[in-house]
Structures are given as structure tokens and as C-alpha cells.
Length: 104
Image (cartoon, rainbow, N blue to C red; front, side, top):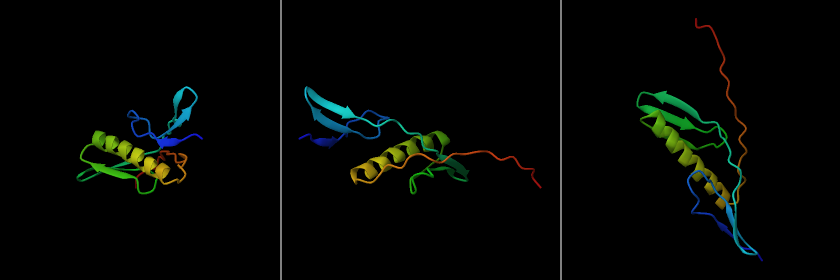
């Protein structure tokens, strides 16, 4: 019988995976990377970021660069939590477009 373990020591950028015992050693199954739309909003005190496909996954920081780093960590943490609790990982489905309008 094969045992599966959460892959906790993944290098940065690897969200989650499974280690499987196979003939000849261990095999790590890591899913394909996913790209989630991140909405960034500037406010009086800095920047906020949210992920439409992952409700509740948010970050806030003083700079845009910092909020991007924090939201990436938040996404990874969110997906890891879903995986560990046996919930499905949502497929990225949001997109964005700019709409040009004439200001009044």
C-alpha cells in the first residue's frame, strides 16, 4: 500500500504536492502551476489585494511590491489549507478587461 504525505518542504513557488512511495524510492507529484487573477487597489494608506477565485484571500501593505509578495504567500497558504482539509482547489476562472468610457 502506498502512503501519501503532505509535501511541506517544497521550494518557494511549489504550492503543494504529494510524496508517494514507489519502487526505487519516493516520487513527488506536484500539480501544474496555476495563475490566479489578483486585483490590486490603492488607498490612502497603501495597497490592498484580493483574489476573486479564492474568496477571503486578501493582503494589505504599504507598497505595491510588498502587497504582491504577501498575496502570493496568502494564495499558497489558502490552497494548502484547502488541500489539507480535502476540499477541491478552485480552477482559475476570473479574467479582466479594461473598458474605455468618456468622463462626464
